[in-house]
Image (cartoon, rainbow, N blue to C red; front, top):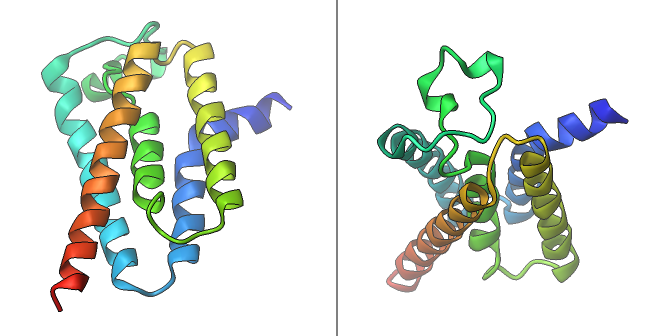
Length: 147
């Protein structure tokens, strides 16, 4: 059971993104979702070394990796927030949206419980992700409306 929880904790942002890509299908939104996902991951890699906000406990596997040594903002929470912010405006089943929220909240709880992030790091990552997701969705919507 512990192994399953660790898999969920580490890989749920990827699972959510793959399911969303499947739901979106081959549309301009898919391209923007993928580009926005790459953008939000890179934004996280830029922000962490600037803020230098340490994790609650630095796991030994991060000791030689200065980017991963820092926890603000949480990359997992940011990626989940991006996905949820993006699909909020799309016409998908509310059941999928509730499911994604549940997985996202559970993942953030696990990141907090394992002391990989503080509540502030999770909150900032989640909000930054939501803002980025809404931004990329709106850009696509404006582009398609102007055609």
